[in-house]
Length: 207
Ligand code: TMP
Image (cartoon, helix red, strand yellow):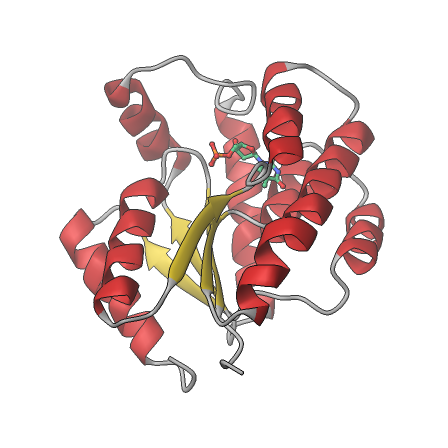
């Protein structure tokens, strides 16, 4: 039987530049002969992508928002993440439960105990092996998104103070779990960030 795969998540406010780095990390892993699966939340399954459309397109109560995030996550874990990890495949996921703590609790004021309860229900025994938190000032992230163009979704249209709260919630979580998190200064050039991610990976005993 192959060894269990590793679970790596990427987090950060919108406009932090995660996408480029996720693709780069997948390339690094594959070059090392590691089978890697790239996926995202909300989404990653047929059900999850439909739930994503609802979440990104429609206004709703924050409790509904949190429950839908975790409903999509439940499906994602059962259908994609757990089977892959069990088969020895590494899973690289664009956002996971830290995003619900940061966006719904930090950003939208969801009661933290509710988020904790949903997490304990949906994945009591699953936690990322490594979480790369892309950190940068919301003003810079907003400028990058504006320069990139495109139609902003419901979250991307939030005000600057919302992203300040999301950023603060992410950083607070990272400080509570320094072993799992690596805070990446996302204001720097893509090449420098890619090198730091490889360094973060190589610093883990399991990599
Ligand atoms: P993405 O644009 O990075 O794919 O993420 C979609 C949006 O959903 C992004 O603005 C963050 C938000 N989100 C939450 O609010 N809570 C969550 O639990 C997740 C996974 C994403």
